[in-house]
Image (tube, rainbow, N blue to C red; front, side, top):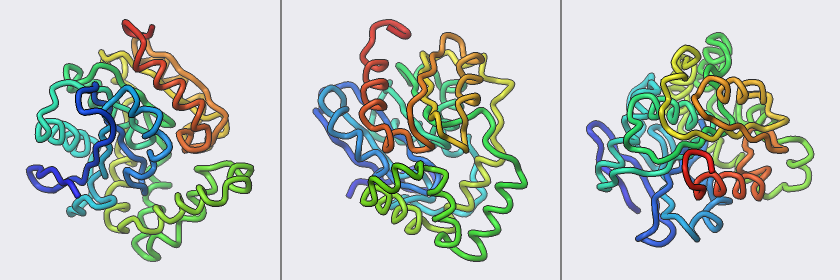
Amino acid sequence: MAFAKLSDAQLFYRWDGPQAAPVVVFSNSLGTSHRMWDSQVEAFAKDFRVLRYDSRGHGESSVTPGPYTIKQLADDVLQLLDALKLDRVFYCGLSIGGLVGMHLGLNAASRFHKIVLSNTAAKIGTPDTWNARITAVQQGGMKGVAHSVIDRWLTAAFRTAHPGETASVLQMLEACDAAGYASTCAAVRDADFREQLHGVQVPTLIIAGTHDPATTPADGHFLENQIPGAKCAELPAAHLSNIEARDDFNRTVLGFLKSQGAHG
């Protein structure tokens, strides 16, 4: 197992793909681990060196005292790049991973060739919603919220047709450290990029899910309209579009990453 030592934590990371290829970093959603990107590895590792990691408070990475902030989680990414001696990479983040991507695009543009913001929004949910989620997890653990979360993450049709993949996601959620999850909920609660997005200077692709109740297509198109030159692709999925619409996701994101110029 590989760990990068940061200033106050350690992050678990994993490599796939040819060593000489350009690097793409995948950043997981709230409540999952690097394993949420299993459906991407085979397709992306043909042309890219795939770097997956567990966000602070998740998976095998350190669970440090919270609450966390998006700046803190974005700094973790930069420290990971520094530890691995990576100057400039491609980046793909989903949900909170997208919020982290927005911060990186605003504050560390020189480190990124292109950024993909998947199933995310400039402002996700309301403080009351997140505070209720934090309280529920602190009082009842992850099993108390996991089933309601997965109902929003994957459509009913997908859950019925793909029970194995659904069970894998549910297992990730239930295995997430409750304290790490609650601390990360606070980072989402406090993040608001609505007035800053015009400052993103990295070529950006937005992925939205037609059936996503958490970060809606309207949220995706808001990002598209606010980030200079950004394009939005809508896929037939709920929140975890990389799993539910795997082939469409892989084709769309790879097309963007491999295109010449800003958006090909």
